[in-house]
Length: 350
Image (cartoon, rainbow, N blue to C red; front, side):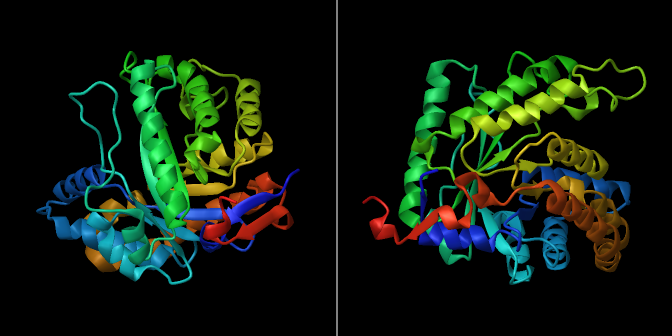
């Protein structure tokens, strides 16, 4: 295998975001619009009046307590600015760079970057990487996907210039199947995810880490369905899907939790590992901290801190155990650390 050339800034920041095994064992709490809705619902259930300070403090406390046990954390500055300050210094920081959501009145779900940010600005705020979410359907018309491809090409060039890793998260969809939790969409999901990963692995995008969806809907996997639910996939088909991902990707990829319960996420990651899937870690979100929202709404700061140091810590520890057993170091896809040439940015194009 030819040696992989990686610029010094990107390499050092990738190492900062990884644990001592080279695995990205990271926490995600960059939700914005959905975070407000979740907290508002929890406050109302607790008979309290919602206010935005509740979101600020929740993110602050989650970051403060759980970054003791993870290699990095993904935060947004808009709602997570206190969390950026409260995180453990040994934990790397990934910052959201895209505007939340998309224009529902325009076909295509096009991405947009935060208007008052740049990668240089994120670096000055302490970022070790930038994350951008893109809604993607490889089967969309060419005129839609061409806009997204150009967007990612520009983003990749900015990442090279700023010398900071880019984590690109893609969320698949099909406008013809509005219910993404349906059996109909579950049948399409493996093809959507695998084709998206193949596209995003192209060198022209300069993506450093692909943040991928689990390529199946676990609710429809044989042996894991609820009573009365007909499976969409056999376990052998799911194992093959996980295995096939390896040949499509030539850079590190990690998994997002996608809002599933903690137990489900653990099952997915274990099955992926046992299938020989070469994922390099996670950015685990709601599967880690979601149950703490109601705890906080009901009992306030002290109750949340207690929950984070018991159940929250356990959620993270159980995921870390799975990662240490099954995940592969991010640099293994390049043949290991000894097969990487770390170069200064001014030499990167030579």
